[in-house]
Length: 142
Ligand SMILES: [Cu+2]
Image 1 (cartoon, rainbow, N blue to C red):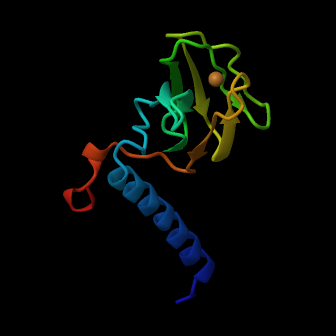
Image 2 (image 1 turned 45 degrees about the vertical axis):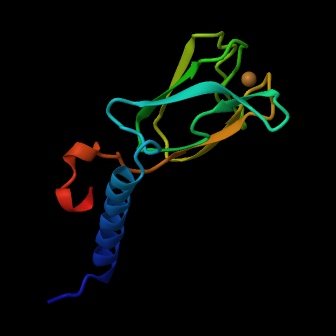
């Protein structure tokens, strides 16, 4: 027999990534996305300790599988934008009640802000594999 250490190593990494995706999909309800249906990030208003309104992307740290479409929905009165820090994507003004969608086809970390309220900061992290809906997982990992 000829040993194939490189092939075994590559296979192990792939299985590791698949398990990561399974575990993430199964263990982070409310944060992990449903990849086929897309993920939603409402833009909401909260109140800080001084009673002033503060606007947030919720969640501000979203983990999704590859090819997920993320939709931001402005649930506040003022307008906002979704502007990537590398400026590759800019929604333009999203008025109250309107939404903006973008499909992430490249794995990586995408930091973004609102160009109107620059303290609004968040990120989307895109895994190199799809996330499976929880219902598809074996019972043991749910
Ligand atoms: Cu804003």
